[in-house]
Image (tube, rainbow, N blue to C red; front, side, top):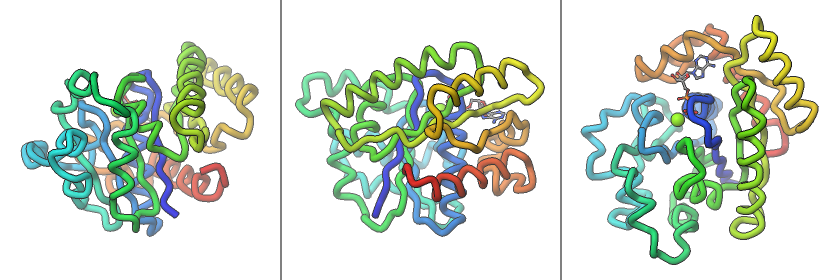
Length: 256
Ligand SMILES: Nc1ncnc2c1ncn2[C@@H]1O[C@H](COP(=O)(O)OP(=O)(O)O)[C@@H](O)[C@H]1O
Ligand SMILES: [Mg+2]
Protein backbone atom coordinates (compact mmCIF):
# COMPACT_ATOMS: atom_id res chain seq x y z
CA UNK A 1 0.00 0.00 0.00
CA UNK A 2 1.34 3.38 -1.00
CA UNK A 3 1.97 5.79 1.89
CA UNK A 4 2.13 9.54 1.42
CA UNK A 5 4.22 11.42 3.98
CA UNK A 6 4.22 15.18 4.35
CA UNK A 7 7.37 16.75 5.83
CA UNK A 8 6.28 20.10 7.19
CA UNK A 9 7.13 22.85 9.65
CA UNK A 10 6.34 26.49 8.94
CA UNK A 11 9.75 27.46 10.28
CA UNK A 12 12.51 27.66 7.72
CA UNK A 13 15.89 26.02 8.17
CA UNK A 14 14.79 23.23 10.51
CA UNK A 15 15.84 20.34 8.28
CA UNK A 16 12.70 19.62 6.21
CA UNK A 17 14.48 19.40 2.89
CA UNK A 18 17.49 17.59 4.35
CA UNK A 19 15.12 15.04 5.86
CA UNK A 20 12.98 14.73 2.72
CA UNK A 21 15.98 14.17 0.45
CA UNK A 22 17.85 11.81 2.75
CA UNK A 23 14.88 9.79 3.98
CA UNK A 24 13.79 9.34 0.34
CA UNK A 25 17.27 8.22 -0.68
CA UNK A 26 17.53 5.77 2.24
CA UNK A 27 14.07 4.32 1.50
CA UNK A 28 15.09 3.81 -2.13
CA UNK A 29 18.29 2.06 -1.06
CA UNK A 30 16.13 -0.16 1.18
CA UNK A 31 14.39 -1.15 -2.09
CA UNK A 32 11.24 0.82 -1.43
CA UNK A 33 10.05 2.49 -4.60
CA UNK A 34 9.90 6.15 -3.63
CA UNK A 35 8.77 9.42 -5.17
CA UNK A 36 10.00 12.72 -3.72
CA UNK A 37 7.86 15.74 -4.54
CA UNK A 38 9.44 19.16 -4.11
CA UNK A 39 6.56 21.42 -3.01
CA UNK A 40 8.76 24.46 -2.32
CA UNK A 41 9.34 27.24 -4.85
CA UNK A 42 12.92 27.48 -3.59
CA UNK A 43 13.51 24.09 -5.22
CA UNK A 44 16.11 23.01 -2.66
CA UNK A 45 15.16 19.35 -2.85
CA UNK A 46 15.40 19.59 -6.64
CA UNK A 47 18.91 21.01 -6.64
CA UNK A 48 19.93 18.82 -3.69
CA UNK A 49 19.14 15.81 -5.89
CA UNK A 50 21.40 17.20 -8.59
CA UNK A 51 18.73 18.25 -11.09
CA UNK A 52 19.68 21.02 -13.50
CA UNK A 53 16.87 23.57 -13.12
CA UNK A 54 17.19 24.59 -16.79
CA UNK A 55 15.98 21.15 -17.80
CA UNK A 56 12.71 21.36 -15.89
CA UNK A 57 11.47 24.71 -17.13
CA UNK A 58 8.42 23.28 -18.91
CA UNK A 59 7.80 20.25 -16.73
CA UNK A 60 7.69 20.69 -12.99
CA UNK A 61 5.19 20.62 -10.15
CA UNK A 62 3.78 23.99 -11.16
CA UNK A 63 2.73 22.78 -14.62
CA UNK A 64 1.08 19.74 -13.05
CA UNK A 65 -0.72 21.84 -10.42
CA UNK A 66 -2.20 24.16 -13.06
CA UNK A 67 -3.27 21.13 -15.10
CA UNK A 68 -1.05 21.80 -18.10
CA UNK A 69 0.59 18.39 -17.79
CA UNK A 70 -0.27 15.35 -15.69
CA UNK A 71 1.55 14.76 -12.41
CA UNK A 72 3.00 11.62 -14.01
CA UNK A 73 4.51 13.69 -16.82
CA UNK A 74 6.38 15.79 -14.27
CA UNK A 75 8.16 12.74 -12.81
CA UNK A 76 11.87 12.41 -13.54
CA UNK A 77 14.26 9.62 -12.50
CA UNK A 78 17.16 10.43 -10.15
CA UNK A 79 20.68 9.05 -9.92
CA UNK A 80 19.40 6.56 -7.32
CA UNK A 81 17.52 3.48 -8.53
CA UNK A 82 13.99 3.30 -7.03
CA UNK A 83 13.91 7.07 -6.43
CA UNK A 84 11.97 9.45 -8.69
CA UNK A 85 11.42 13.16 -8.26
CA UNK A 86 8.84 15.76 -9.17
CA UNK A 87 10.97 18.90 -9.29
CA UNK A 88 10.06 22.52 -8.60
CA UNK A 89 11.39 25.99 -9.17
CA UNK A 90 10.31 29.59 -8.68
CA UNK A 91 7.29 29.03 -10.97
CA UNK A 92 5.43 27.96 -7.81
CA UNK A 93 5.75 31.39 -6.19
CA UNK A 94 2.49 32.84 -7.52
CA UNK A 95 0.38 29.72 -7.39
CA UNK A 96 -1.59 30.66 -4.28
CA UNK A 97 -2.90 33.79 -6.00
CA UNK A 98 -3.63 31.98 -9.27
CA UNK A 99 -5.96 29.58 -7.46
CA UNK A 100 -7.65 32.05 -5.18
CA UNK A 101 -11.10 31.58 -6.74
CA UNK A 102 -10.85 27.91 -7.47
CA UNK A 103 -13.17 25.52 -5.67
CA UNK A 104 -11.61 22.63 -3.74
CA UNK A 105 -8.23 24.19 -4.25
CA UNK A 106 -6.87 22.50 -1.13
CA UNK A 107 -7.59 19.09 -2.66
CA UNK A 108 -5.83 19.64 -5.94
CA UNK A 109 -2.63 17.73 -5.17
CA UNK A 110 -4.58 14.89 -3.56
CA UNK A 111 -6.77 14.51 -6.64
CA UNK A 112 -3.79 14.49 -8.99
CA UNK A 113 -1.95 11.95 -6.82
CA UNK A 114 -4.84 9.53 -7.25
CA UNK A 115 -3.94 9.16 -10.92
CA UNK A 116 -0.24 8.63 -10.33
CA UNK A 117 1.67 5.37 -10.83
CA UNK A 118 0.45 3.15 -8.01
CA UNK A 119 3.63 1.13 -7.73
CA UNK A 120 5.33 3.60 -5.37
CA UNK A 121 5.72 2.39 -1.79
CA UNK A 122 6.28 5.92 -0.49
CA UNK A 123 5.60 9.44 -1.68
CA UNK A 124 7.51 12.07 0.31
CA UNK A 125 6.36 15.69 0.13
CA UNK A 126 8.91 18.39 0.99
CA UNK A 127 6.95 21.47 2.12
CA UNK A 128 7.80 25.18 2.01
CA UNK A 129 8.37 27.15 5.24
CA UNK A 130 4.78 28.38 5.61
CA UNK A 131 1.30 27.09 6.33
CA UNK A 132 0.03 28.38 2.99
CA UNK A 133 -1.58 26.84 -0.06
CA UNK A 134 1.14 24.30 -0.87
CA UNK A 135 1.57 23.00 2.68
CA UNK A 136 -2.21 22.67 3.06
CA UNK A 137 -2.38 20.81 -0.26
CA UNK A 138 0.40 18.51 0.96
CA UNK A 139 -1.36 17.87 4.30
CA UNK A 140 -4.65 17.13 2.56
CA UNK A 141 -2.91 14.67 0.22
CA UNK A 142 -1.01 12.81 2.96
CA UNK A 143 -1.50 9.81 5.22
CA UNK A 144 0.88 11.13 7.81
CA UNK A 145 2.80 14.20 8.87
CA UNK A 146 6.43 14.20 9.87
CA UNK A 147 7.70 17.29 11.67
CA UNK A 148 11.42 18.05 11.76
CA UNK A 149 12.11 20.16 14.83
CA UNK A 150 15.30 22.00 15.59
CA UNK A 151 16.24 21.72 19.26
CA UNK A 152 16.11 25.43 20.07
CA UNK A 153 14.13 27.75 22.30
CA UNK A 154 11.21 28.70 20.01
CA UNK A 155 10.68 25.19 18.69
CA UNK A 156 7.68 24.46 20.94
CA UNK A 157 5.81 27.64 20.01
CA UNK A 158 5.92 26.92 16.31
CA UNK A 159 4.95 23.33 16.94
CA UNK A 160 1.71 24.38 18.66
CA UNK A 161 0.69 26.37 15.60
CA UNK A 162 1.48 23.49 13.29
CA UNK A 163 -0.48 20.99 15.39
CA UNK A 164 -3.46 23.36 15.33
CA UNK A 165 -3.32 23.37 11.56
CA UNK A 166 -3.08 19.58 11.63
CA UNK A 167 -6.26 19.46 13.71
CA UNK A 168 -8.12 21.79 11.35
CA UNK A 169 -7.05 19.76 8.31
CA UNK A 170 -8.07 16.52 10.06
CA UNK A 171 -11.49 17.92 10.94
CA UNK A 172 -12.36 19.63 7.69
CA UNK A 173 -10.36 18.15 4.87
CA UNK A 174 -8.50 14.93 5.60
CA UNK A 175 -9.70 12.83 8.56
CA UNK A 176 -7.21 10.07 7.79
CA UNK A 177 -4.16 12.28 8.30
CA UNK A 178 -2.12 11.29 11.36
CA UNK A 179 0.89 12.65 13.16
CA UNK A 180 3.57 10.21 12.03
CA UNK A 181 6.24 11.66 14.21
CA UNK A 182 8.37 14.52 15.40
CA UNK A 183 12.02 14.34 14.42
CA UNK A 184 14.63 16.18 16.45
CA UNK A 185 17.17 17.67 14.05
CA UNK A 186 20.49 19.51 14.24
CA UNK A 187 20.98 18.23 17.74
CA UNK A 188 24.14 19.56 19.32
CA UNK A 189 25.19 17.28 22.19
CA UNK A 190 27.51 19.98 23.63
CA UNK A 191 24.67 22.48 23.92
CA UNK A 192 22.69 22.30 27.16
CA UNK A 193 19.67 23.90 25.51
CA UNK A 194 19.50 21.12 22.91
CA UNK A 195 19.16 18.58 25.73
CA UNK A 196 16.54 20.63 27.55
CA UNK A 197 14.38 21.20 24.49
CA UNK A 198 14.58 17.54 23.53
CA UNK A 199 13.55 16.47 27.06
CA UNK A 200 10.59 18.88 26.96
CA UNK A 201 9.41 17.65 23.58
CA UNK A 202 9.66 14.02 24.65
CA UNK A 203 7.75 14.76 27.86
CA UNK A 204 4.91 16.34 25.86
CA UNK A 205 4.75 14.05 22.86
CA UNK A 206 6.11 10.75 24.21
CA UNK A 207 6.24 7.97 21.66
CA UNK A 208 5.32 10.33 18.85
CA UNK A 209 8.90 11.60 18.89
CA UNK A 210 11.29 9.45 16.88
CA UNK A 211 13.95 7.79 19.04
CA UNK A 212 16.46 8.63 16.34
CA UNK A 213 17.93 12.10 16.68
CA UNK A 214 19.68 13.80 13.76
CA UNK A 215 22.90 15.41 14.99
CA UNK A 216 24.33 18.63 13.66
CA UNK A 217 26.82 17.32 11.14
CA UNK A 218 28.95 19.26 8.68
CA UNK A 219 28.82 16.51 6.07
CA UNK A 220 25.02 16.85 5.98
CA UNK A 221 25.28 20.56 5.21
CA UNK A 222 27.94 19.95 2.55
CA UNK A 223 26.12 17.23 0.63
CA UNK A 224 23.57 19.47 -1.22
CA UNK A 225 26.38 21.52 -2.76
CA UNK A 226 27.70 18.27 -4.23
CA UNK A 227 24.15 17.50 -5.44
CA UNK A 228 24.15 14.24 -3.50
CA UNK A 229 22.11 12.72 -0.69
CA UNK A 230 24.34 12.03 2.30
CA UNK A 231 24.49 8.25 1.73
CA UNK A 232 26.17 8.87 -1.64
CA UNK A 233 28.33 11.73 -0.37
CA UNK A 234 29.74 10.20 2.82
CA UNK A 235 28.05 7.01 3.98
CA UNK A 236 30.28 6.77 7.04
CA UNK A 237 29.44 10.23 8.39
CA UNK A 238 27.29 10.53 11.49
CA UNK A 239 24.71 12.32 9.37
CA UNK A 240 24.39 9.39 6.98
CA UNK A 241 24.26 6.86 9.80
CA UNK A 242 21.54 8.83 11.58
CA UNK A 243 19.33 9.01 8.46
CA UNK A 244 19.81 5.27 7.89
CA UNK A 245 18.78 4.70 11.51
CA UNK A 246 15.77 6.99 11.07
CA UNK A 247 14.74 5.03 7.99
CA UNK A 248 14.86 1.75 9.94
CA UNK A 249 12.76 3.29 12.71
CA UNK A 250 10.38 4.85 10.16
CA UNK A 251 9.79 1.46 8.52
CA UNK A 252 9.27 -0.34 11.82
CA UNK A 253 7.50 2.20 14.04
CA UNK A 254 3.98 1.27 12.98
CA UNK A 255 2.82 4.91 12.98
CA UNK A 256 3.52 5.60 9.33
N1 LIG B 1 21.69 17.87 10.79
C1 LIG B 1 22.25 18.91 10.15
N2 LIG B 1 23.51 19.28 10.44
C2 LIG B 1 24.07 20.35 9.82
N3 LIG B 1 23.45 21.10 8.91
C3 LIG B 1 22.18 20.78 8.58
C4 LIG B 1 21.52 19.67 9.18
N4 LIG B 1 20.25 19.60 8.67
C5 LIG B 1 20.15 20.61 7.80
N5 LIG B 1 21.30 21.33 7.72
C6 LIG B 1 21.57 22.54 6.92
O1 LIG B 1 20.76 23.58 7.46
C7 LIG B 1 20.16 24.34 6.42
C8 LIG B 1 18.64 24.26 6.49
O2 LIG B 1 18.24 22.92 6.30
P1 LIG B 1 17.03 22.55 5.33
O3 LIG B 1 16.91 21.08 5.32
O4 LIG B 1 17.18 23.23 4.02
O5 LIG B 1 15.83 23.19 6.14
P2 LIG B 1 14.33 23.56 5.67
O6 LIG B 1 14.02 22.73 4.47
O7 LIG B 1 13.49 23.23 6.86
O8 LIG B 1 14.32 25.02 5.38
C9 LIG B 1 20.73 23.80 5.12
O9 LIG B 1 21.84 24.56 4.74
C10 LIG B 1 21.13 22.38 5.48
O10 LIG B 1 22.19 21.91 4.67
MG1 LIG C 1 13.33 23.33 2.56
